[in-house]
Structure formats: structure tokens, C-alpha cells
Length: 111
Length: 192
Image (tube, rainbow over all chains, first blue to last red; front, top):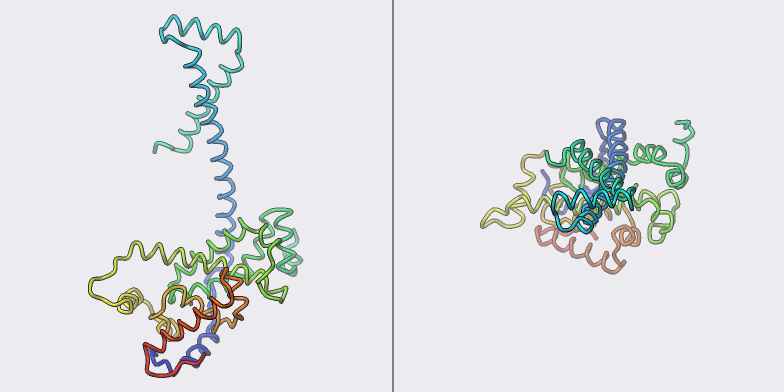
């Protein structure tokens, strides 16, 4: 091994001559592009996941605001009222909750 | 997509096509520059293949994510059009190397009562070191990067400054300091 610095120039010259090549550049390119594409699809997944989480939290809050005091009969009555007045809100909220649970299951959020 | 026609296109054209039509046009850019980035990684990392590969891959992924900024930011990357993308990619790769080196330092404990030089040597002992890698052991990560870019790849001070986001004066003085540090570790003179 060369540690003498008076050989600095010759060491640099020798290094310039040295050629480095990836063993399998096609595989490397493929892996890199796959990583780029999966990163893009992960971003989409997380955007979708965030949207569903936001909707679900909003839905839960909405249901708590509407359903007070919390008793079985009151819940039943209020669900009926909400279903009559704003059925699409409740439907959206519950669909979001179901979606959230399915996504968490599919992406193994809890292992 | 016709592969042979695509391979003939310039870097700038492929960047434009990637931005307009998607990642399928980024593949030829990866193939074209992967050996170059891998070589840079090997030189900066002291011949560690996995680190060099990681650096190259991270650099390509970052380059893809920030491709739009390449188109609008050509300043400081050199005058030769054909080299601009490579110079830009080199800057990204060097930043990736800095991040990887920092992450590595976090997890590799410094042995007690040892100098930086001994510590650095111990990290490389298992590798078949080239003379060049051994020459750069006394230097910091940034100094290794600057010496490699300046002397092995023969980039101008202006190009290095553009790649690393430094001023020309700072780049020059940092390179001089690295040379001075190499001198300190040897009685023999080092060319500037």
C-alpha cells in the first residue's frame, strides 16, 4: 500500500486509469426504476390513507356531536334523525370507517 | 418506446421526455450514468461496493424526484451542455454520500484513546484498499469528496462549487486545507 505523499500525483494518475463497473447494470437500472415507481405508488397510498383517516376522524367527531347524550335509545333516535336529515353524511362516515379498517388490514398497519 | 432511438438521445432530451411522459425515459439515463456514479461511490467510500451502490441508487431516486429543478436551474453546472446533467447528478450523489457517511458515523462507535486516523483505518481494514483510498484516509468526508472531484475527475473549482452549493472561494480554500492536511501526514510535498 502506498502512503507516501510524494507519490500523490502518480496515485491520482493510477486512480484515473482505474475503471469501476457495476456487475449487473441492467439489474441495477431495473431495481432503481422499481424503487422510483414503488415510491410513487407509496405516495399515492399514503395520500389515500390520509384522506380516509381525515374523513373517519371527521365522521367520528360528527357522530359524537350529533349523538348526545350517549344512550342506546338516544343513539338510535339520533341515528334515525341523521339518516332522515343528512343520510349521505352518515353513510360517507361509516363507509370511511369501513374503508379505514380494510386498508389497515390490507397494509398490515398493526402487524 | 424505441430503445435504440431513446439511447441516442441526449441527457437533456431524456430529462425533458421524463418530465413530460414519465419514468420510462429515466431508465436510459440510469443506464448511461450508473457506472460513473458507482465509480464515484467506490472512490468516496474507500472501495465499499454496497455503500457505493446505495449512494448511486439514492442519487438516481433523488434526481428523479427533483428533475423539474434541473431544467430550470442550469447555472453553476459548467458550460458544456452534455456534462450538465452529469454534473448535477454528481452534486446529488455527493450529498447522498455525506448523508450515508453521517448515518454510518452514528452507528459506529469511536474507539477510546484512538486518533481519527486510526479510527478511519480500522473501518477500512477489512477492505482491499486502493492506494488512492489509503491516501485519503486522514481526510474528512467533505475533504475526500473535494479531492476526488478536483483531482481524479478534474472538475474545475467553479463546477465543484456549483455541484456542492459552495462559493468558488470556499471550495478553493477547503481544497487547500485538505492538501495541507495531507502534507501534515507526510514529510513529502503534495502538488496543488
